Image 1 (cartoon, rainbow, N blue to C red):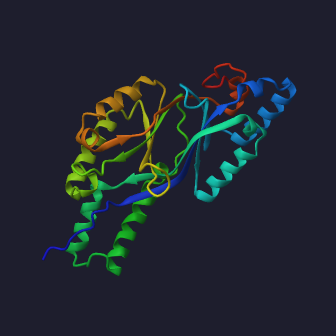
Image 2: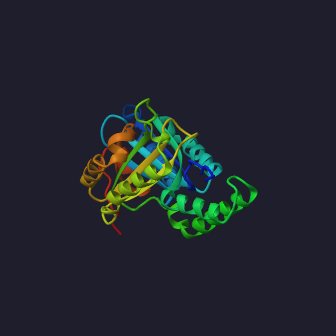
Image 3: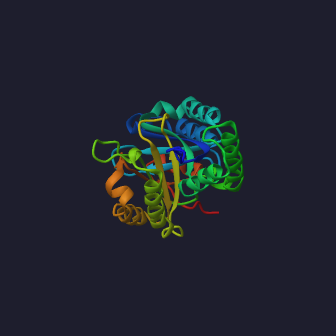
Amino acid sequence: MTPTLPAVPLTLEGSAVLHQMARVNWKAWRALPESERQEIVAEAAAVLGDGKYTAPFAMLGHKADLMLIHFRANFEELAAAQMAVNRLRLSEFLEQTSSYVSVVELGLYESTSKVYNQLVDSGVEVHSEAWDKGIADVMERQRAAMAPRLYPEVPNARYVCFYPMDRKRGEQKNWYSEPMSARGRMMHEHGMVGRRYAGTVRQIISGSIGFDDWEWGVDLFADDPVVFKKLIYEMRFDEVSAVYALFGSFYVGLRFSAAELGAFLNGTMPKWPVAG
């Protein structure tokens, strides 16, 4: 009898990720003396640092004025980053409107079936100790090979588009009831669309099942915001999105450096990249 293979695809997890969205209390901020505003900006800029693992974005629309994206090695460091922001005097002038917690995730649909079948063909019993060791060995090799993608810096692009998403679990269309082979095929076709935009947009997928209200978070980074529309619209036509995707709120913003925080808070569009 052919053994029943696990339905769950293998995944690699990396950086812990936190998105913080906030509105600025502009009236209270502008009421401060200039000298005090400068002190608050200097303190916040020092905490934000060089932008490699915490980056600020000036947001478009009513959902937020400011978004901070944090990448950290683990949840302990992520909690420390959140607390560092909360301790800032600037936080007294920020009203958090939303947040999102996730971990960078690389799905291994294309290799999962291959690994499972290789183990079975070698006579390894599913979920046995030998099975778990075989999976662990494969994952360790994959983790080492993909370390730069698992622990990235915040991409150095002017624009960001962030949104959470789910796969449908309805009575008629349920992603999780589809066989591994079908899901793998659809994810491959979905991925091929994204690869055509590899030179103009950087995509970072983070998993949030068990961490937040949606199943994944998607960050797109580019120097031309129109590419977000083109990529997401084209993906709407592949099967995995057209039939199984559900999307949350979209957040679009413009990157700036910590050195430009004062300009942002003074109502001036921060420059990018920073001169010099």
